[in-house]
Image (cartoon, rainbow, N blue to C red; front, side, top):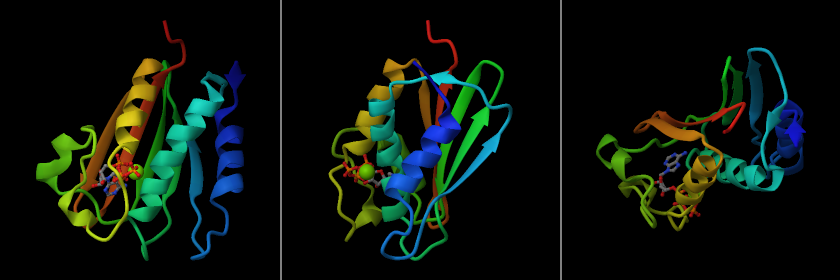
Amino acid sequence: EPIDLVAFIMHFIEQNYLNLEDGRTVTLSVEGSRRDVRLDENLFSHILGNAISNAFKYSKDRPNPEVKIHYDDDFYSITIKDHGIGIPKKEQANLFESFFRAENTTGIEGTGLGLVIMKQFVEMHQGTIKIESAKGKGTSVIITFPYQPS
Ligand code: ATP
Ligand code: MG
């Protein structure tokens, strides 16, 4: 069923990430011309929640995470960006392995399964997931989907 991603993500943020106990929230921005997309809302909320909760937990005491929607011609993307601890370059190749946790996560809870599940979901919808990160600076998770999955 076609959904308006902007409205959907705005609602999702309002429901889950407005006025967190430490006063943080997440900002949303939109580029390109808004149009409906086809996504399973339940599954999509799950992966969006995973990515946003990573963005918060790996960026304590830093500026708020950001979500960006980009509408391109044949594809659209959702970027979840934070200004947190980042991921050491040499560990970035292992991010999609089950139970993997980078060495700079000491003291931050996690199992190392969130990204594995996200990647499965994204690929099920013929999308791609890419992570760009710099240690100490922050991380962006970029999820891209075709408007018309075959
Ligand atoms: P969980 O299974 O509860 O999500 P997790 O957060 O450790 O646990 P993933 O979400 O799969 O697991 O992430 C795997 C690893 O990738 C993390 O342990 C961390 O090392 C790194 N990572 C993922 N997202 C970020 C981020 N936004 N900033 C810094 N490191 C990250
Ligand atoms: Mg996680």
